[in-house]
Amino acid sequence: MVPLNRALSKLGILSRTQATDAIRAGRVKVDGHVVTDPATPVVPERVRITVDGERRSRAAWRTILFYKPRGVVTTRHDPEGRKTIYDVIGPAAQGLIAVGRLDLATTGLVMLTSDTRLAHRITDPANAFPRVYVVTVRGRVTDDEAGALDAASVIVRKVSARETHLVVELRRGRNREVRKLFESIGHEVIALKRVRFGGLELGKLTPGQWRALTRTEVEAAFAPRI
Image (cartoon, rainbow, N blue to C red; front, side, top):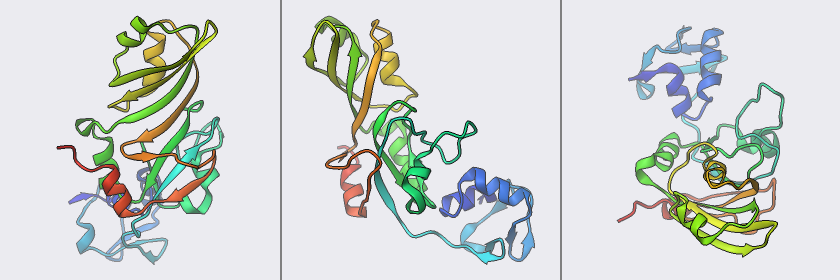
């Protein structure tokens, strides 16, 4: 059994927040009865769930790769009224959840999926799928400084007195991790783009564009490491 709001989320019908709001508003019925407690335990496969009078079942499997532009937040709704990735993608993002987040100023690869189990597996720190970023920071980063960073790998691509361009690989998805790493050695990040996640790459996408992924593509990109 799982809580009703989680069941709706796992089925890809509504996000957890949307499900909670819909349940409390009396819009959800289980086997014909209105349920207003989001924590009500259900077995999704054994009950009939309706939202606003319509029978809801598991959404079709869909996963997309999106190039997040700068100035867009990786949330479904923003209390400050900022543009979200769902505003940019439009109807194609309906029923999808973002796998991990990028902050407002960071651009690049974001994956969205209807498969909540897939999302949890990919973001589980124990699986340590690589996240690769192209980074520009203020000032000259020395080899000693680069070597002191707590990252899977750091490659210095171009150095000048004004700024340094690097490629950084992490094996975790902590909030603002790249920015904090460089702050720890006294350098401000001025541009940050995620170019790879697991085996997925941005390819020829430009900011604001997205493309559908196949199951085969996703399975190959996030295959268990031996």
